[in-house]
Image (tube, rainbow, N blue to C red; front, side, top):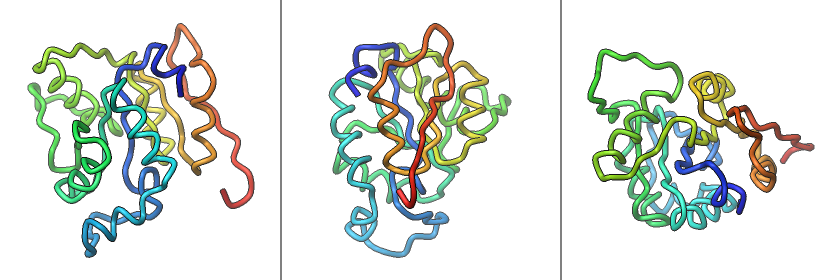
Length: 175
């Protein structure tokens, strides 16, 4: 993880369902904040808490439940931005982006308004959907396909440079 802090990454963009959270909520989670919190991967909670003092952190999700997700995530990291299916304001709404690119660009725009400059080449997207990661890489960001918490070990190595790429992860068994 130290390589992220010392390296080129300024924005850690994390998918929610099946990445931060151990289940797919399908945007219809009926439990309480505490119920949802109990379903978060401990390793992802630790990553978010450790990253927030050093990096910008955002949740990028297709869920419609951004308020619920925001409440849960902000218990861990109060400044984390949440972008969901229906919360992606962008200055140029005519731009259609594949995968999570609209989410990422929305976060970059908000950070710029706050005086924080982040380029797409300084973003790492962690997502269980390979297509979202490939779109991020095609657009100049780094990506990690999340298959299990063991994949987070890929963040222990320096990022390849100078070109952003998809980080590989070898997962064993039912991890």
